[in-house]
Image (cartoon, rainbow, N blue to C red; front, side):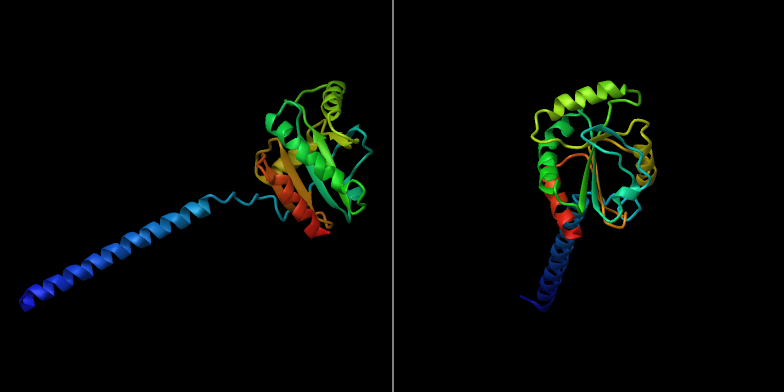
Length: 198
């Protein structure tokens, strides 16, 4: 082999190594991008103050206000009897409620929502009562009759609100977690977050 052939072979090997390195780098960037994209975005509402709530007792509930929640860890769970993901998730929510029902430092608020903007209080109450009869105990449940609480949260969230939506508020009235929609393990995640705030 001549010196020229040896130099060409060395140059080809160097070019091959750079090509393999470049392909590997592109693949690594692709994998990291997919991992990053797979993470749910942090809701815009986290770190914001809980806006004024306007909820009416529907079942087993007493009047509630921002002032009555001061100093407590508060979980607001918006759901509907007409919503399949809400129905699927509700048994886990009921378990979470039972776990903290006697803890004076925690308030868990169930908010039954109608399917549309217009509803009849008595009809919502009857449908909610029928649904809740499947669960042990009495879960205090509220109505957002004028949708004022949902409208206030929509403004803070940046323009959309659906059910189920669960908002966790710390003792100072700051939103610590917001789960929009329903995923397996959501209530366990909230349970850990509640414990960390106590």
